[in-house]
Image (tube, rainbow over the protein chains, first blue to last red):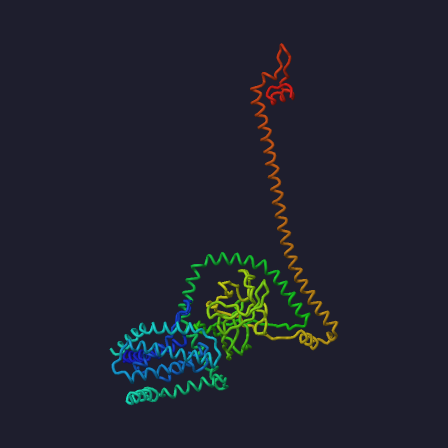
Length: 168
Length: 405
């Protein structure tokens, strides 16, 4: 009986894993910046949100994504609401692509992801420079977009294993 | 055509408004809330400010806890890297320490003098306390360079408080919560610091490059050649944002750019000092003294007080000089001993050389004696020679048998 309860709670944690990972990543910002590789950075939450909302993962609550955005703003030091808007826009984009797609194609998803993150990063850059007078390096944004796009395919293959494990 | 537009609108509407069974809010609601929050943030609305402070308190602590595993990996990585260069660093540090020790005494004297002069010209005297703060969040975002420290308004930290690593400037506080604060690092693109470049004494503005160095901007044309690798950048105090005379880094010339290599490594910061200041004018100081002590009511007493302070400073510097003198005396005695021993050595060596020359002359005489003794010696029948052993005989032998020069 105890073993069964433990198994159920482990399964529960496993099903909540993506959202836990999202919160850990926004609080921790794990992006290997301490390696001091010049210009190297990527946005892991973008990949995570895009993939799991596209797959309409049951425990990936939009409201929690919104809260994660607020946390990210606090940690990074951006004005409150910027990341929440970005994350919610990704959710909208994935909801839209789900509605118009009959046969999903990973390659199409990948390039659609590039389009979405470019759009969102441009929006972020514009809001921060125009309304909040931030001095930002556009090159860093472009390189961040490039690495996020490049890493998407790697993380997607890992996430697919996770989903497979969950279905089994 | 109309049908494809309808499909697009339906898809968009569905994306915005449709809630699946698991979702509590539609995306349209969340987007609206986000925009609303951004607008209120840009207007610096009070509710948002308090909301942000509340979130900050929770999130910074949570972030610190969540970052523990990553920090462990990061620290291990840096420790391994540090150990590999440990010995070289130790040697460099030892050398540097020796140099610094010698400079320390003169610096202290200059500080006393500076303080005294500030008092005399009625300038402000800032009695500053440095509060040790721990860095709880340091994520090195590629866009913004900032860190979170565990001291806030309850420790008298204010917006603009200067933050140090040892005695080097690191940045200033841009956001204060009750128990935490955000420090904008000098390397951030939004950081502007009025600086002086020494020893050329040139004023400029240093702007963060977004990397681990700063850039010198707004400098006069045609003075690029004046700088060398020994140029040091420190705060000028212009604009009263930063205190004057705080070291920042070394000047580096790259092509036609002037960059600043920071003395402090911002990626390695663990603890920093926040300077909590209480600015008092010299006049106020005098008034305080007057309030506390009725006997100090007239300006003569104040003057005496200043003179007493001055005397104290001079006594302290004198004692330092005395110590230095004693040390120098010991050194001189040591050197004298060395000179005496060297002198003795020289005398003995001289004696040896003289003996050597004498021996050589003797040897030469004996050699020539064998050859020319017949010519110089007295003969029994015809007494034309010289008697053996006389100086004349020796001279004759040395002249190779010639009786007369």
